Length: 278
Image (cartoon, rainbow, N blue to C red; front, side, top):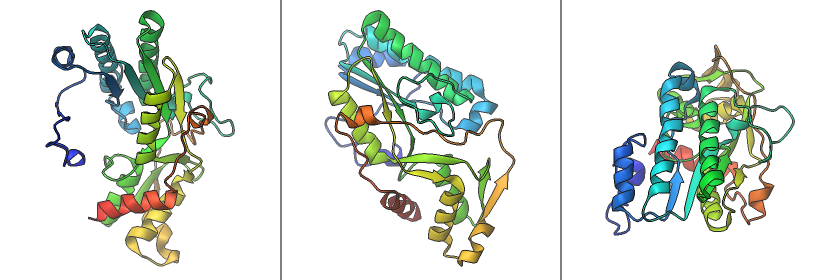
């Protein structure tokens, strides 16, 4: 059992089933043997750099896996009441000035984002054709304790703890909006409770951090070096084919349901660093 699930195994209302979302026999069996009311579909390959190297794997997991799950859920004897598909702000593509709302066109610029957009169209088709009760969310970069080490914050932290430099692909202008995991969870639960079926909800914050600033903050927290030495722990490396500068999104639609991000950047990054040190 993954460390993030420790402490759950003894709960009566919890069952952990390990398997492949692309395996129709397994997924169908689960829907036959369990009465599933709600599905949060978060299964995905998400590392953008890897999506350029193995796009077929991203296609299989992100698109075919979504199709398998949708089909099994739609055909289930016990019909689910909600199917929440967790997508990404990257489906909009990059923007230097405009903040995207849910009606903006999708213009993904990397294979990962393209597969997430394709999966969105699949999900939406089940609403259009069958009135299957789907909801789609598009969120900023989610971060927090126990995040997988391929993501930028745990990657930088791991490099620094091993006395290696933070390596940055792209330029000084690159930034990301960061959403703490507990705020993301509250957004997903609110969408489940109050969201309109067939609709899309952006889940974003105003916390936009340049990646080089992120690296500097983590160097200060982990290495305790003099300010004049902070940049010595940062290195720019050759960029992958496409590095988007930023993904600004508007979340007024979700905010009208009552959602607000409650965790400050300072508190979120403190919790993240603290747990990794343990």
